[in-house]
Length: 493
Ligand code: FB9
Image (cartoon, rainbow, N blue to C red; front, side):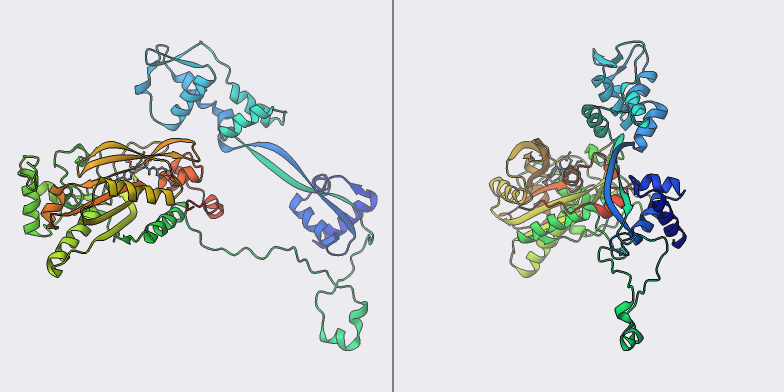
């Protein structure tokens, strides 16, 4: 570093004003970071050999996608090149991200039209406009503001800001480097030599050594906030630390018939070994069978032969409602043991697994948030109120309920809200009153009802962190740097 400092001083002696430290780095054949280090150690914060004026340049740079689109064509160009002349039915188009992007931007750029439900080319050849624009960026050609907005929206360019210095001779300019003292010693004080010694200036702007700290994942930050809201509302957390569940607890206790499509392998992950679970409680097991086969509690049941083997199958739980069922069963048992029913408010926030078609916003798992209240005489009005209170606390005030169907709740309702960030109505969850065919076999008192609702962590997190693809939030391709640096986004009022 000393040699570089001397080389800088020698250069400045010949060139009293250097407009850009970027050019100086090229002239001295070192990196700009090296030059900046040398300049700062010669600048006003230290020996004042030099005056430094900080400036910056901004230019567009290509992202990895931008490079890819130049090399291989944009998604719309690739789709155009592979689309058969007769076109493809929209519902038969592959669901992958490139095809979805290609379809959307191809329509915007006039490559395709939809005729009789088919995506068709509108001409034999096309100019890959956005790829041409990216080549202009690559060649450092000027592009308009609208063009840059389009390429930014497509995440194909990013703004690179380069900070540099204008350098000129300082009032204490010299061609040699004085030996600056860095420590005030006992000897200096005793001999008084400190008065004539040149000390190196303290750099109070120097950043401290970056400490490698742990960081919470955005999902965990959102989880913490939702948990705070639910605890504040008096809810207790349920024990959800068991991903493998029997179909019995995940479906049968919820009165979900064994023929329900959600129970087959297209929607549910089955465990190979151990493939089946033990019967937890023979008496309860038979009551559940009876509810499915014959009903009871005012119901005629599903009237089919209920199979032990089906209920014993081990699966990855498809919802945390399986845990709710276990907790309600325990509540019924405690009520019998204590001879007294105590109302309960429970919640769970944890991973659930579904054999879903993967796409930009869906993986084969997500984090479900579920709340439930068990008390005497609860009804749909109570449910709407507690849901409205919960969502208001996480920033959604305009709520609507749409009648829906769940196998284990009646009535049921999808929940919608006018989202302040998206500025439109969006689905925010689902809800319902657990059916008597579910609560009855557990042995809960007949006047006790249970209201419940659910939502996910991923959807609100992606909205609030402005993440378009769930793979940028969860999974092996997530940018750790992003995770470490993203802000805490606050849902609570
Ligand atoms: O989270 C969802 N949307 C959402 C929630 C909050 C939000 O912003 C808030 C400010 C913070 C924004 C959006 N949804 C539920 C709705 C949709 O995203 C939906 O497309 C995806 N759903 C998941 C399931 O999809 C297979 C979200 C997940 C979901 C849906 C229903 C339940 C739980 C999770 C449930 C339930 C339930 C019903 C009755 C009784 C007990 C539980």
